[in-house]
Length: 216
Image 1 (cartoon, rainbow, N blue to C red):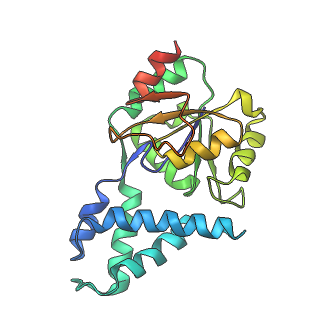
Image 2 (tube, rainbow, N blue to C red):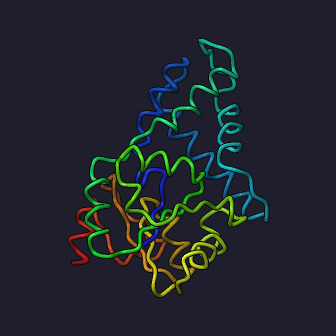
């Protein structure tokens, strides 16, 4: 079982406060993250790759441009980006990870971000020992949702697509996994509607505990 990390496992809402700290509107947090993903996808479509951290910092510079900040530009960027290291998991994650581990599922993360961020996140939640591996697209050479990212994870785990599933909060991630032959689980954290232009997930749940219960 592969897990996306950003927003799927981690609660990114505190980053809005980081924007406010530097004098920028809180709503820019979501705009910035969407633009970061957009540009990462664009580079992947062009056959290029940039690290999540580097792209995130540069996208933030672009987004903060023109705002009256209460500190230097570089200090503002550093303050927002450093917020990633202090993020915590969603409340359902610790018990959900343990419940899935009790089902003898092999649990692995696959992130467009760094493995070190995933490690700190899971260590902080007390569930790092339940997750077998922490994989990053930095080693795959291409961002999700490109097929190569999922192929890299499958090869690292030594499994075929039919024997793997991806759990993610992002429909675009699930579409990439589905096209790579994996089963998909939509962790619907926002009580949203799944886009009809993507193929429907195999399972839809609101929490990881609900997912574990459905697989018993």
